[in-house]
Amino acid sequence: MAERRREDMEAGGSGSDGVRLDGAGAVGFGVDTKSMKCENCGATVSYSAREKSLACPYCDSNYVIEASVEDIVRPEGVIPFMVPRDRAAQRFREWLGNGFFRPGDLVERARPERMRGVYLPYWAFSCSTESSWSASAGYTYKETETRRVTDADGTEREERVEVTKVRWEPVTGTHRETYENVLVPGSKGLDAKLLKSIEPFQMKDLQPYTPDVLAGWEAESYAVDKDGAWPEGKRIVERRIELAVADMVPGDKHKDISVSTTFSDVSAKLLLLPLWISAYNYEGKVYRFIVNGQTGEVQGEAPTSKAKLMILIAVVVAVLVTLGLLVLR
Ligand SMILES: [Zn+2]
Image 1 (tube, helix red, strand yellow):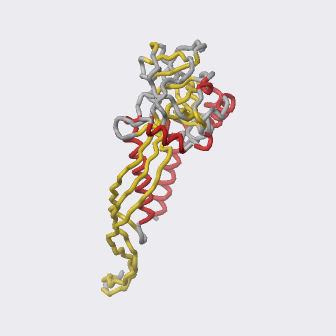
Image 2 (cartoon, helix red, strand yellow):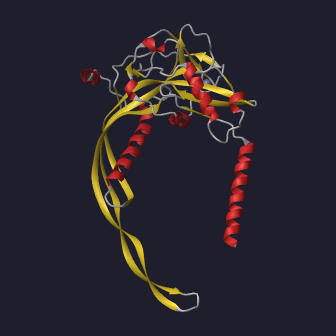
Image 3 (cartoon, protein in one colour):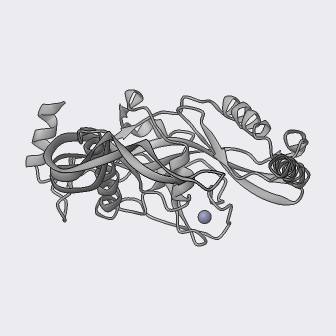
């Protein structure tokens, strides 16, 4: 595998702006697909050629036009669907029933739409980093201070109290690490925050892409290319470095962490990751939800029960009033 990678690099898989593509430059999905672009949300989705339905899986819009996906980078890896449709539906019902603030009849009265299994495009970045950092390390110590206090009868006296203080010292250091499979969605149809909420995906199930995995599923073409996705990938890595550096600072506390990082060997792979997408109707309103097709993690929008919210507010007020009365006594 490592051998093949090296060949790919030399075969000119170099990206336009520093991010190298791991793949050897194949394009398209490698299978006969029908593709359409949604004029409402902008997502381009491909189906196996025999699929009849032509509505956008993300926004349900019928305003779709035929699109070509012949020139897109071919995915390199795929995590197949491991949660079948009925299991995903069951996970969704469990999720609906959770959460104190949801209406009590939500599970019975929610009308879910058909779930659509969609492979979402993700860029998986790998890179090496070398960082130099500086910070202030805080060491706590106890000191005894003398204070002037006035007693209830008006006499003044001195009292010795022990106080905790922090001594700050500047520290510097270096941090080196290699990061792999830092995931950034290339999707346009789904909200980035919602997508983040059903992570993580487990890379242990990652397989090389073969066109037959698409049979029976829909697949979105990336709307954000690797160079467009890299700034977010870089931010994710920088946050991880900062956390690692915070752990490296000696002492009891830290502040003023400043990190300067050089990135090298940045490469990107296009992956397809499995997602169930659907929505449900409750009292005339539509709520979207998604299920991680590998782990079964569910996230989405849900109504809030006004009655339960009122009860909570009443309880909080009652507690505050009781506390107030206790203090006043
Ligand atoms: Zn759409």
